[in-house]
Length: 69
Image (tube, rainbow, N blue to C red):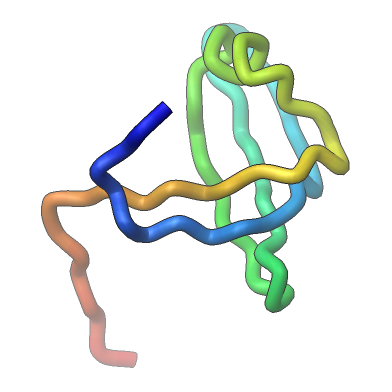
């Protein structure tokens, strides 16, 4: 499947928690960072997601906010 998003982070599913209609997926990138995504449970099922699966976290956003620490 071709996507226009260019921000792809290769990683491994570290945890997958499904509750009702939604699922929380934590992906550990190859450099040790974690990315968390909230997706539908149906999408998690269709993708066959499970802990240990090799995936790409694809980031596509219309804006990115930066906050002063």
